Every structure is written in C-alpha cells, then in structure tokens.
Length: 101
Image (cartoon, rainbow, N blue to C red; front, top):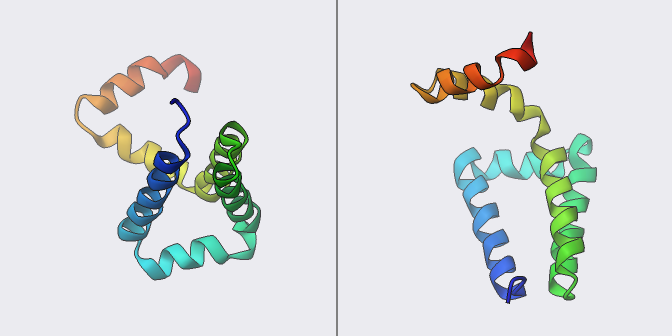
C-alpha cells in the first residue's frame, strides 16, 4: 500500500516532534501560531485532516505547501550552512555556479 494512512500520520507526528526538539517547544509554538504563518499552519493541519479521511494525495500536497510557507524564511540560512559543509559546499557551488551568475 503506497499511501497507508497510519504510516503517513506516524511520519507527521515524528516530523513535528523532530521540529519541536530541534527548535525548542516554545519557538515551535510561536512559529506555528504567528499571524504571518497562519496560512502555512492551516494548510498543514488541513493536509493532516485529509490524510485521516483517506485522501492522501490531496493531504500530502497541502502539507508540502504548508511546510514551504512555514519554513520558507529559513532557506537562506540553510543555503549558507550547506555552502560551509566540506565537499558538499564545493559540489553545490560547482553545480549551481551558472545559476547564480
């Protein structure tokens, strides 16, 4: 079964727990409940709801959109971090050199 809803829900719970452990519980709560991120939070929770009512493709699409909205501000920091990783940073710079020029 490619879209087993129990495993999808369990993966979402583990993902949310990982984010909370990484950022801290208070920061995660502030991120999810801030007015600027309410569209992303609503989209993610609606996607989770669609997973539970057996519409997994719609649910996954909504969750991906919600994650992009919630964590979109972190991409420049992630990019800067990845550039500093040995070997990986060189590969990324080499592959995307023409895209940044």
